[in-house]
Length: 189
Length: 345
Image (cartoon, rainbow over all chains, first blue to last red; front, side, top):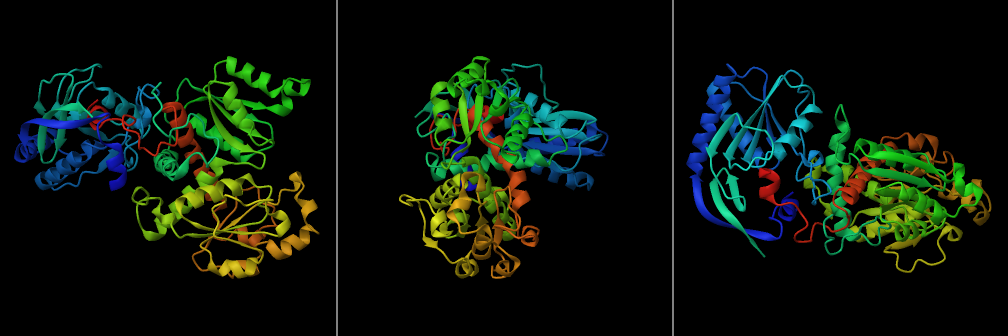
């Protein structure tokens, strides 16, 4: 896994150079706690709620949200993992490979799915994720939680829960982890 | 289409050109398609609008159906072409036939032919990607890939590890005996090359008459004529089909004698270590190279090989048609998607 991640994740033809730390680890934790509250508030509890983290950036965030939800409500919320490579609309336009395993717990029919991703940008990943989810059953509703909404949408998609609204230039790069959010640039090698 | 990165191939013609990195990459992508196969709707839209032609100039059940299933599960359109029922029978040359089909707008040809090198020839004639589905005595690369996939899957299960945590290092030092009609077997050639590249210790076991005229360049650790002596010391016993249609019978005093010396009977299967696996590419000649009851043992992976075959072929078609190449081993800078754009896009 380590080997594979190393091979698959470096930005194409360039290196990520961090410029500004936008959120600290504590800020990220606070935002996730707030998002967890909002999920409970919006859905009047956690009945039928399933979190689905998008590979790979959404995965640690979805587990963190699940543990906050469990602390607050005492309910264990199932967490699924989803890789959307096979549903992307740019297959054949640029190289697309699955980055990590998909693992959806059971049938999603009738469930309330909260998709979790790190950055909402063009919206194409979310579009692919919606198509992928449909293959796992007809969810009662799908909501979207993201750590950073950086704008530049190319599709009519909006998030339900946002950690931080962050206007960016289209050529900038946003790096999200549990350690914080960093804005930077991709510099060609 | 993306520019080809160094080491990548537009076609999958042989294991030889793939190398260890290329094999590893395909096995890893196959993991994702095994997951797709487990879903209630085992289909993804990845290759919508692409056309795959299966061009088979030799009989086949599993390879053809496996490729067609793979293409359909990727949402590609599949055209099925049998030389037996085509204008080849009216005297049209293979080249004219292939160019005619290609002119209809085809993205990939899956080619099986009785002559070695036919898929490579097709690859020169058309712009589409070509997958070798078995050519004469030469190679059958997807069979070797699915065999490697199956071995890795079983080793991962036994070690209690997740598949994605099991790299190809599990093949290093693995003792594999390939038994039987090596001479006529493209499966053996591909498998020996694949296992050799991954670091396994391969022993060929066959009567001298069923070994190829030359084994030069084969990454083997040993050749043996004595199956009983080899069996206790192997992790995988891979049986080959006696290829009577290629005249294997003429190389043997009798099929019964072959079966007595080289068939995996239940007596011989008892010589295998407790953890040893039994594999066969199919179709099985029951009672010749493998006894009925041995084929039914839990250690026999024959049907698992078949189901993994679909996932591995999905991976090959997805990589060839989706990103235009296989066999980069993920090493090419500029080839792979960026973290930011994929995750955030």
